[in-house]
Length: 338
Length: 117
Image 1 (cartoon, chains in turn yellow, blue):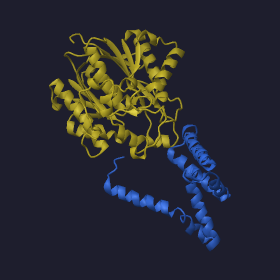
Image 2 (spheres, rainbow over the protein chains, first blue to last red; image 1 turned 120 degrees about the vertical axis):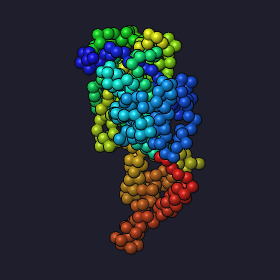
Image 3 (cartoon, one colour; image 1 turned 180 degrees about the vertical axis):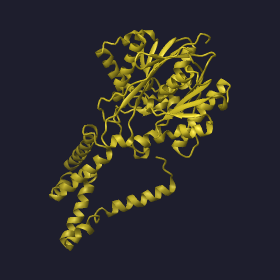
Image 4 (cartoon, rainbow over the protein chains, first blue to last red; image 1 turned 90 degrees about the horizontal axis):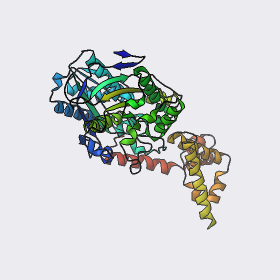
Protein backbone atom coordinates (compact mmCIF):
# COMPACT_ATOMS: atom_id res chain seq x y z
CA UNK A 1 0.00 0.00 0.00
CA UNK A 2 1.28 3.45 -0.89
CA UNK A 3 2.39 5.44 2.09
CA UNK A 4 3.48 9.04 1.66
CA UNK A 5 5.18 9.94 -1.61
CA UNK A 6 7.36 6.99 -2.47
CA UNK A 7 6.97 4.26 0.12
CA UNK A 8 5.07 1.03 0.46
CA UNK A 9 3.91 -0.71 3.59
CA UNK A 10 3.17 -4.41 3.39
CA UNK A 11 0.13 -5.26 5.48
CA UNK A 12 0.45 -8.97 4.71
CA UNK A 13 4.03 -8.98 6.04
CA UNK A 14 5.68 -11.28 3.48
CA UNK A 15 8.05 -13.67 5.23
CA UNK A 16 11.67 -14.12 4.18
CA UNK A 17 11.38 -17.91 4.33
CA UNK A 18 14.96 -18.63 3.26
CA UNK A 19 18.09 -16.88 2.10
CA UNK A 20 21.44 -18.09 0.87
CA UNK A 21 24.77 -16.43 0.22
CA UNK A 22 27.75 -17.60 -1.81
CA UNK A 23 31.02 -15.66 -1.80
CA UNK A 24 34.57 -15.73 -3.12
CA UNK A 25 37.89 -16.05 -1.29
CA UNK A 26 38.37 -12.41 -0.22
CA UNK A 27 34.91 -12.22 1.34
CA UNK A 28 35.52 -15.57 3.07
CA UNK A 29 38.67 -14.15 4.64
CA UNK A 30 36.82 -11.04 5.81
CA UNK A 31 35.27 -10.59 9.26
CA UNK A 32 31.92 -12.04 8.11
CA UNK A 33 33.46 -15.15 6.53
CA UNK A 34 31.61 -17.54 8.85
CA UNK A 35 28.20 -16.04 8.10
CA UNK A 36 28.05 -17.10 4.45
CA UNK A 37 26.63 -20.43 3.29
CA UNK A 38 29.29 -21.23 0.73
CA UNK A 39 32.77 -19.74 0.53
CA UNK A 40 34.72 -20.49 -2.64
CA UNK A 41 38.49 -20.65 -2.28
CA UNK A 42 38.90 -20.20 -6.02
CA UNK A 43 37.45 -17.03 -7.59
CA UNK A 44 37.01 -18.83 -10.93
CA UNK A 45 34.68 -21.44 -9.36
CA UNK A 46 36.26 -23.80 -11.86
CA UNK A 47 34.62 -21.94 -14.74
CA UNK A 48 36.28 -20.90 -17.97
CA UNK A 49 35.43 -17.23 -17.76
CA UNK A 50 34.77 -14.74 -14.95
CA UNK A 51 31.30 -14.14 -16.33
CA UNK A 52 30.48 -17.83 -16.02
CA UNK A 53 31.85 -17.78 -12.48
CA UNK A 54 29.54 -14.89 -11.58
CA UNK A 55 26.55 -16.72 -13.04
CA UNK A 56 27.54 -19.86 -11.11
CA UNK A 57 27.61 -17.87 -7.85
CA UNK A 58 24.00 -16.85 -8.39
CA UNK A 59 22.87 -20.32 -9.46
CA UNK A 60 24.33 -21.76 -6.28
CA UNK A 61 22.74 -19.07 -4.10
CA UNK A 62 19.33 -19.59 -5.73
CA UNK A 63 19.55 -23.39 -5.50
CA UNK A 64 20.67 -23.27 -1.87
CA UNK A 65 17.76 -20.93 -1.08
CA UNK A 66 15.30 -23.38 -2.65
CA UNK A 67 16.85 -26.28 -0.73
CA UNK A 68 16.58 -24.42 2.57
CA UNK A 69 12.92 -23.58 1.88
CA UNK A 70 12.24 -27.14 0.78
CA UNK A 71 10.84 -25.98 -2.53
CA UNK A 72 11.53 -26.64 -6.18
CA UNK A 73 11.87 -23.97 -8.86
CA UNK A 74 8.43 -24.89 -10.19
CA UNK A 75 6.81 -23.79 -6.92
CA UNK A 76 8.21 -20.27 -7.18
CA UNK A 77 6.06 -18.01 -9.34
CA UNK A 78 8.59 -15.29 -10.07
CA UNK A 79 12.29 -14.67 -9.86
CA UNK A 80 13.37 -11.02 -9.77
CA UNK A 81 17.03 -10.27 -10.28
CA UNK A 82 19.69 -8.11 -11.80
CA UNK A 83 23.43 -7.52 -11.77
CA UNK A 84 26.12 -5.18 -13.05
CA UNK A 85 26.90 -6.88 -16.32
CA UNK A 86 25.79 -5.41 -19.63
CA UNK A 87 22.26 -6.66 -20.39
CA UNK A 88 22.25 -8.29 -16.89
CA UNK A 89 23.59 -11.51 -18.40
CA UNK A 90 24.49 -13.14 -15.08
CA UNK A 91 20.86 -13.18 -13.96
CA UNK A 92 19.41 -13.96 -17.36
CA UNK A 93 21.77 -16.89 -17.86
CA UNK A 94 21.16 -18.14 -14.33
CA UNK A 95 17.40 -17.81 -14.90
CA UNK A 96 17.83 -20.06 -17.91
CA UNK A 97 18.82 -22.92 -15.62
CA UNK A 98 16.61 -21.92 -12.67
CA UNK A 99 13.54 -22.24 -14.88
CA UNK A 100 11.40 -19.76 -12.96
CA UNK A 101 9.39 -16.99 -14.64
CA UNK A 102 11.91 -14.17 -14.70
CA UNK A 103 11.72 -10.43 -14.17
CA UNK A 104 15.07 -8.80 -14.95
CA UNK A 105 15.82 -5.47 -13.31
CA UNK A 106 18.80 -3.12 -13.37
CA UNK A 107 19.58 -1.05 -10.32
CA UNK A 108 23.37 -1.54 -10.23
CA UNK A 109 24.33 -2.14 -6.59
CA UNK A 110 20.85 -1.15 -5.38
CA UNK A 111 19.45 -4.25 -7.11
CA UNK A 112 19.31 -6.33 -3.93
CA UNK A 113 16.76 -4.10 -2.20
CA UNK A 114 15.04 -3.05 -5.44
CA UNK A 115 14.37 -6.75 -6.03
CA UNK A 116 13.28 -7.41 -2.45
CA UNK A 117 10.94 -4.40 -2.47
CA UNK A 118 9.33 -5.49 -5.74
CA UNK A 119 9.08 -9.08 -4.55
CA UNK A 120 7.36 -7.96 -1.34
CA UNK A 121 4.99 -5.79 -3.35
CA UNK A 122 4.07 -8.75 -5.60
CA UNK A 123 3.43 -10.87 -2.52
CA UNK A 124 1.39 -8.15 -0.86
CA UNK A 125 -0.70 -7.70 -4.00
CA UNK A 126 -1.49 -11.40 -3.97
CA UNK A 127 0.31 -11.88 -7.29
CA UNK A 128 2.34 -14.87 -6.10
CA UNK A 129 2.69 -17.55 -3.43
CA UNK A 130 6.47 -17.51 -3.55
CA UNK A 131 8.84 -14.97 -5.08
CA UNK A 132 12.60 -15.21 -5.15
CA UNK A 133 14.90 -12.25 -5.60
CA UNK A 134 18.63 -12.39 -6.10
CA UNK A 135 21.67 -10.57 -7.30
CA UNK A 136 25.37 -11.17 -7.78
CA UNK A 137 28.64 -9.49 -8.63
CA UNK A 138 32.19 -10.62 -9.28
CA UNK A 139 35.29 -8.54 -8.72
CA UNK A 140 36.95 -9.55 -11.98
CA UNK A 141 33.92 -9.07 -14.23
CA UNK A 142 33.29 -5.61 -12.77
CA UNK A 143 36.96 -4.66 -13.15
CA UNK A 144 36.89 -5.76 -16.76
CA UNK A 145 33.65 -4.01 -17.66
CA UNK A 146 33.95 -0.77 -15.69
CA UNK A 147 37.67 -0.24 -15.11
CA UNK A 148 40.66 -1.97 -16.71
CA UNK A 149 41.59 -5.59 -17.43
CA UNK A 150 43.08 -7.00 -14.23
CA UNK A 151 46.33 -8.01 -15.98
CA UNK A 152 46.90 -4.35 -16.78
CA UNK A 153 47.62 -3.81 -13.08
CA UNK A 154 46.27 -0.28 -13.10
CA UNK A 155 46.75 1.87 -10.00
CA UNK A 156 43.73 2.70 -7.89
CA UNK A 157 43.16 5.77 -5.76
CA UNK A 158 42.25 5.19 -2.07
CA UNK A 159 38.68 6.35 -2.77
CA UNK A 160 38.11 3.38 -5.08
CA UNK A 161 36.11 0.40 -3.83
CA UNK A 162 36.53 -3.33 -4.20
CA UNK A 163 33.70 -5.15 -5.96
CA UNK A 164 32.43 -8.04 -3.87
CA UNK A 165 32.58 -11.50 -5.40
CA UNK A 166 29.35 -12.96 -4.14
CA UNK A 167 25.69 -13.68 -4.67
CA UNK A 168 22.70 -13.52 -2.38
CA UNK A 169 19.14 -14.73 -2.85
CA UNK A 170 16.02 -14.52 -0.73
CA UNK A 171 12.72 -16.34 -0.97
CA UNK A 172 9.49 -14.68 0.12
CA UNK A 173 6.54 -16.73 1.32
CA UNK A 174 3.10 -15.83 2.64
CA UNK A 175 3.62 -17.42 6.00
CA UNK A 176 6.15 -19.29 8.06
CA UNK A 177 8.97 -18.55 10.42
CA UNK A 178 11.49 -15.92 9.61
CA UNK A 179 11.87 -12.18 9.40
CA UNK A 180 9.21 -10.19 7.55
CA UNK A 181 9.39 -7.36 5.07
CA UNK A 182 7.31 -4.53 6.53
CA UNK A 183 7.97 -1.52 4.31
CA UNK A 184 10.03 -0.21 1.42
CA UNK A 185 10.96 3.13 -0.06
CA UNK A 186 11.83 3.50 -3.72
CA UNK A 187 14.53 6.10 -4.24
CA UNK A 188 14.79 8.98 -6.66
CA UNK A 189 17.79 9.51 -8.90
CA UNK A 190 20.22 11.90 -7.25
CA UNK A 191 23.09 13.23 -9.34
CA UNK A 192 25.48 15.64 -7.69
CA UNK A 193 27.66 15.92 -10.77
CA UNK A 194 30.42 13.54 -9.68
CA UNK A 195 32.14 12.02 -12.70
CA UNK A 196 34.88 9.94 -11.08
CA UNK A 197 34.07 6.20 -11.24
CA UNK A 198 36.80 5.66 -8.64
CA UNK A 199 34.79 7.62 -6.10
CA UNK A 200 31.35 6.03 -6.20
CA UNK A 201 30.81 6.25 -2.46
CA UNK A 202 30.84 10.04 -2.60
CA UNK A 203 28.50 9.99 -5.59
CA UNK A 204 26.00 7.64 -3.91
CA UNK A 205 25.94 9.09 -0.38
CA UNK A 206 23.44 11.90 -1.19
CA UNK A 207 21.06 9.33 -2.74
CA UNK A 208 21.23 7.19 0.41
CA UNK A 209 20.50 10.17 2.65
CA UNK A 210 17.64 11.25 0.37
CA UNK A 211 16.00 7.82 0.56
CA UNK A 212 16.49 7.40 4.32
CA UNK A 213 14.96 10.81 5.08
CA UNK A 214 12.12 10.13 2.61
CA UNK A 215 11.47 6.76 4.28
CA UNK A 216 11.18 8.30 7.74
CA UNK A 217 9.04 11.18 6.41
CA UNK A 218 6.66 8.86 4.50
CA UNK A 219 6.22 6.45 7.40
CA UNK A 220 6.14 9.17 10.03
CA UNK A 221 8.91 7.54 12.05
CA UNK A 222 12.29 8.57 13.40
CA UNK A 223 15.51 6.68 12.72
CA UNK A 224 15.39 5.36 16.29
CA UNK A 225 12.52 3.13 15.10
CA UNK A 226 15.25 0.83 13.75
CA UNK A 227 17.96 -1.01 15.70
CA UNK A 228 20.21 -0.64 12.70
CA UNK A 229 20.25 1.30 9.45
CA UNK A 230 22.77 0.08 6.89
CA UNK A 231 23.65 1.53 3.54
CA UNK A 232 24.71 -0.83 0.76
CA UNK A 233 28.17 0.09 -0.39
CA UNK A 234 29.17 3.66 0.37
CA UNK A 235 32.58 2.62 1.71
CA UNK A 236 34.66 4.80 4.01
CA UNK A 237 34.45 7.92 1.83
CA UNK A 238 30.70 7.79 1.20
CA UNK A 239 29.94 6.76 4.79
CA UNK A 240 31.68 9.86 6.13
CA UNK A 241 29.85 12.06 3.61
CA UNK A 242 26.50 10.49 4.58
CA UNK A 243 27.21 11.35 8.22
CA UNK A 244 27.96 14.95 7.23
CA UNK A 245 24.75 15.18 5.20
CA UNK A 246 22.66 13.79 8.08
CA UNK A 247 24.14 16.45 10.34
CA UNK A 248 23.50 19.16 7.74
CA UNK A 249 19.85 18.14 7.36
CA UNK A 250 19.53 17.85 11.17
CA UNK A 251 18.44 14.24 10.72
CA UNK A 252 18.85 12.43 14.06
CA UNK A 253 20.76 9.39 12.75
CA UNK A 254 22.44 9.12 16.17
CA UNK A 255 19.18 7.61 17.50
CA UNK A 256 20.15 4.36 15.84
CA UNK A 257 23.25 2.46 14.78
CA UNK A 258 24.25 3.49 11.29
CA UNK A 259 26.65 1.25 9.38
CA UNK A 260 27.60 0.35 5.83
CA UNK A 261 27.77 -3.12 4.24
CA UNK A 262 30.86 -2.07 2.28
CA UNK A 263 32.65 -1.45 5.57
CA UNK A 264 31.36 -4.61 7.27
CA UNK A 265 32.36 -7.18 4.69
CA UNK A 266 36.12 -6.62 4.63
CA UNK A 267 38.83 -5.86 7.15
CA UNK A 268 40.18 -2.70 5.56
CA UNK A 269 43.29 -2.77 7.73
CA UNK A 270 44.39 -6.16 6.48
CA UNK A 271 42.76 -6.51 3.06
CA UNK A 272 43.71 -4.28 0.12
CA UNK A 273 40.20 -3.09 -0.64
CA UNK A 274 40.76 0.69 -0.65
CA UNK A 275 37.63 2.40 0.70
CA UNK A 276 35.66 -0.85 1.20
CA UNK A 277 33.36 -3.23 -0.64
CA UNK A 278 30.91 -2.45 -3.43
CA UNK A 279 28.88 -4.27 -6.05
CA UNK A 280 25.46 -5.90 -6.13
CA UNK A 281 26.75 -8.78 -4.04
CA UNK A 282 27.87 -6.49 -1.21
CA UNK A 283 24.53 -5.51 0.32
CA UNK A 284 22.97 -8.85 -0.72
CA UNK A 285 25.52 -11.08 1.03
CA UNK A 286 25.85 -8.86 4.11
CA UNK A 287 22.06 -8.56 4.52
CA UNK A 288 21.06 -12.13 3.68
CA UNK A 289 24.11 -13.65 5.36
CA UNK A 290 25.13 -11.53 8.30
CA UNK A 291 22.24 -9.21 9.21
CA UNK A 292 19.39 -11.72 8.99
CA UNK A 293 21.43 -14.14 11.11
CA UNK A 294 21.82 -11.40 13.70
CA UNK A 295 18.03 -11.00 13.65
CA UNK A 296 17.59 -14.74 14.14
CA UNK A 297 19.97 -14.59 17.09
CA UNK A 298 17.72 -11.92 18.55
CA UNK A 299 20.39 -9.20 18.40
CA UNK A 300 18.28 -7.03 16.10
CA UNK A 301 14.51 -6.55 15.93
CA UNK A 302 14.06 -4.03 13.16
CA UNK A 303 16.52 -3.00 10.48
CA UNK A 304 16.46 -0.73 7.45
CA UNK A 305 18.66 -1.81 4.55
CA UNK A 306 19.37 0.96 2.07
CA UNK A 307 21.06 -0.47 -1.01
CA UNK A 308 22.86 2.18 -3.02
CA UNK A 309 23.50 2.09 -6.75
CA UNK A 310 25.63 4.09 -9.16
CA UNK A 311 23.79 3.88 -12.45
CA UNK A 312 26.63 4.61 -14.81
CA UNK A 313 27.61 2.69 -17.91
CA UNK A 314 31.19 2.34 -19.20
CA UNK A 315 30.13 4.37 -22.22
CA UNK A 316 28.49 7.17 -20.22
CA UNK A 317 31.53 7.86 -18.07
CA UNK A 318 33.90 7.65 -21.01
CA UNK A 319 31.78 10.36 -22.63
CA UNK A 320 32.19 12.49 -19.53
CA UNK A 321 28.67 12.09 -18.13
CA UNK A 322 28.16 12.41 -14.39
CA UNK A 323 27.00 9.43 -12.34
CA UNK A 324 23.26 9.18 -11.57
CA UNK A 325 22.78 7.48 -8.21
CA UNK A 326 19.90 5.82 -6.44
CA UNK A 327 19.09 4.11 -3.16
CA UNK A 328 16.23 1.78 -2.27
CA UNK A 329 15.30 1.05 1.32
CA UNK A 330 13.63 -2.05 2.71
CA UNK A 331 12.54 -2.44 6.32
CA UNK A 332 12.91 -5.94 7.74
CA UNK A 333 11.45 -6.97 11.11
CA UNK A 334 12.01 -10.08 13.16
CA UNK A 335 9.08 -12.46 12.67
CA UNK A 336 6.77 -13.38 15.52
CA UNK A 337 7.44 -17.08 15.34
CA UNK A 338 11.20 -16.86 14.77
CA UNK B 1 78.71 9.84 -7.98
CA UNK B 2 76.77 12.98 -8.92
CA UNK B 3 75.52 11.16 -12.05
CA UNK B 4 73.84 8.55 -9.82
CA UNK B 5 72.19 11.16 -7.68
CA UNK B 6 70.88 13.08 -10.68
CA UNK B 7 69.66 9.87 -12.32
CA UNK B 8 67.76 9.08 -9.11
CA UNK B 9 66.32 12.58 -8.73
CA UNK B 10 65.37 13.18 -12.37
CA UNK B 11 63.99 9.68 -12.96
CA UNK B 12 61.97 10.03 -9.78
CA UNK B 13 60.77 13.50 -10.77
CA UNK B 14 59.39 12.16 -14.08
CA UNK B 15 57.51 9.46 -12.14
CA UNK B 16 56.19 12.09 -9.71
CA UNK B 17 54.90 14.03 -12.73
CA UNK B 18 53.13 10.88 -13.94
CA UNK B 19 51.63 10.26 -10.49
CA UNK B 20 50.39 13.85 -10.36
CA UNK B 21 48.77 13.46 -13.78
CA UNK B 22 46.88 10.39 -12.47
CA UNK B 23 45.96 11.66 -8.99
CA UNK B 24 45.54 15.41 -9.47
CA UNK B 25 44.97 15.65 -13.21
CA UNK B 26 42.56 12.67 -13.07
CA UNK B 27 44.03 11.25 -16.28
CA UNK B 28 43.67 7.55 -17.00
CA UNK B 29 46.89 5.50 -16.88
CA UNK B 30 46.87 5.29 -20.69
CA UNK B 31 46.49 9.07 -21.08
CA UNK B 32 49.27 9.60 -18.56
CA UNK B 33 51.61 7.35 -20.48
CA UNK B 34 50.79 9.01 -23.80
CA UNK B 35 51.29 12.47 -22.28
CA UNK B 36 54.76 11.52 -21.06
CA UNK B 37 55.67 10.03 -24.45
CA UNK B 38 54.54 13.22 -26.20
CA UNK B 39 56.49 15.37 -23.73
CA UNK B 40 59.63 13.35 -24.48
CA UNK B 41 59.01 13.70 -28.21
CA UNK B 42 58.61 17.46 -27.94
CA UNK B 43 61.71 17.72 -25.76
CA UNK B 44 63.78 15.95 -28.40
CA UNK B 45 62.15 17.97 -31.17
CA UNK B 46 63.49 21.17 -29.66
CA UNK B 47 66.84 19.51 -28.99
CA UNK B 48 66.90 19.29 -25.22
CA UNK B 49 66.52 15.57 -24.60
CA UNK B 50 70.10 14.65 -25.54
CA UNK B 51 71.67 17.13 -23.10
CA UNK B 52 69.12 15.87 -20.59
CA UNK B 53 70.37 12.26 -21.04
CA UNK B 54 73.99 13.42 -20.66
CA UNK B 55 73.03 15.06 -17.40
CA UNK B 56 70.71 12.45 -15.84
CA UNK B 57 71.77 9.21 -17.57
CA UNK B 58 69.33 6.38 -16.88
CA UNK B 59 67.13 8.87 -15.03
CA UNK B 60 66.23 10.19 -18.49
CA UNK B 61 66.49 7.02 -20.59
CA UNK B 62 64.50 4.56 -18.45
CA UNK B 63 61.19 6.46 -18.03
CA UNK B 64 58.66 6.32 -20.87
CA UNK B 65 59.52 9.90 -21.96
CA UNK B 66 62.62 8.39 -23.52
CA UNK B 67 60.37 6.46 -25.92
CA UNK B 68 59.00 9.71 -27.32
CA UNK B 69 62.54 10.97 -27.57
CA UNK B 70 63.60 7.84 -29.49
CA UNK B 71 60.69 8.12 -31.96
CA UNK B 72 61.57 11.70 -32.86
CA UNK B 73 65.29 11.00 -32.79
CA UNK B 74 65.03 8.24 -35.41
CA UNK B 75 62.78 10.35 -37.62
CA UNK B 76 65.12 13.36 -37.47
CA UNK B 77 68.20 11.26 -38.24
CA UNK B 78 66.64 9.68 -41.33
CA UNK B 79 65.31 13.10 -42.35
CA UNK B 80 68.88 14.31 -42.58
CA UNK B 81 70.01 11.23 -44.53
CA UNK B 82 67.11 10.58 -46.90
CA UNK B 83 65.06 13.77 -46.95
CA UNK B 84 61.37 13.97 -46.05
CA UNK B 85 60.67 10.28 -46.68
CA UNK B 86 63.01 9.66 -43.75
CA UNK B 87 60.40 11.03 -41.34
CA UNK B 88 58.23 8.04 -42.23
CA UNK B 89 60.96 5.41 -42.47
CA UNK B 90 62.96 6.59 -39.49
CA UNK B 91 60.30 6.92 -36.83
CA UNK B 92 60.69 3.32 -35.64
CA UNK B 93 64.42 3.15 -36.41
CA UNK B 94 65.67 3.56 -32.85
CA UNK B 95 62.59 2.07 -31.16
CA UNK B 96 62.48 -1.02 -33.35
CA UNK B 97 64.11 -3.25 -30.73
CA UNK B 98 61.64 -2.21 -28.04
CA UNK B 99 58.54 -2.50 -30.20
CA UNK B 100 59.58 -5.78 -31.82
CA UNK B 101 60.40 -7.40 -28.51
CA UNK B 102 57.06 -6.21 -27.09
CA UNK B 103 55.24 -7.90 -29.97
CA UNK B 104 57.33 -11.09 -29.89
CA UNK B 105 57.20 -11.57 -26.12
CA UNK B 106 53.46 -10.78 -26.05
CA UNK B 107 52.99 -13.44 -28.70
CA UNK B 108 55.00 -15.98 -26.70
CA UNK B 109 53.11 -15.12 -23.53
CA UNK B 110 49.78 -15.50 -25.34
CA UNK B 111 50.78 -18.99 -26.46
CA UNK B 112 51.70 -20.05 -22.93
CA UNK B 113 48.94 -18.45 -20.88
CA UNK B 114 45.36 -17.54 -21.51
CA UNK B 115 44.47 -14.09 -20.20
CA UNK B 116 40.97 -13.78 -18.73
CA UNK B 117 40.83 -10.02 -18.28
